Image 1: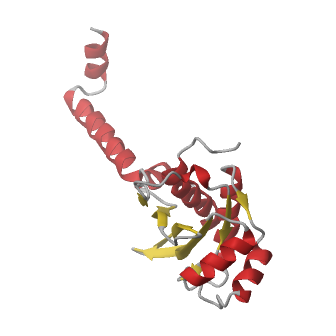
Image 2: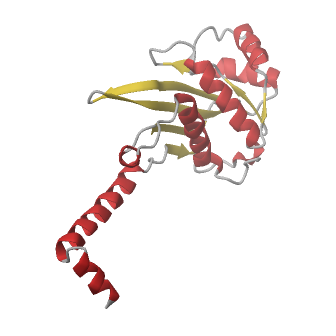
Image 3: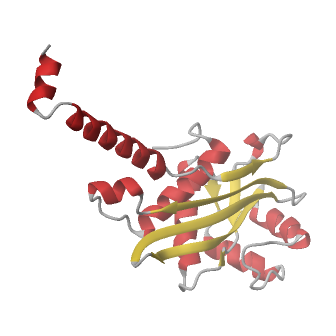
Length: 209
């Protein structure tokens, strides 16, 4: 009886229609605002538990912004350490790769270089990849931050791809616009992208803090 009385005071069915429409719009916004999961592949027959020490190969920068590969690499290294892996210092990796003739081939590594460099660095795998988007994208007169990163985990001896994943996160969603939520920065999105990329490999089992 109280519900009927409230509806009668607020205009009855017209108010109910507007309320249901608002709830429907909010539900749609929630659905549309959800970030997709990374597109990933994990080698079906490999036990990754043998990997304890890795080296991160210089990432390939496919964006228009300079030095974004180094920003992403720092986040990648930090996340690997959080997962309990040992990561070779970047300067040592660069020196060994150059000594093996790697040159400036960012984002990839040849079999001959991987075998020798892997032995010298004492690693079981290399992390390679590329930064596809990092910054702000224009759409309909508005701009929003967007970060897209792809990563691979490559066995140092066989050069087999153990894991490969790509992920995109945008900082402004439908729900954000409705609720007036501030945009995230590209650096915030980068942390989110890298964390969710490695979630597709390790899940939450090997996280540190």
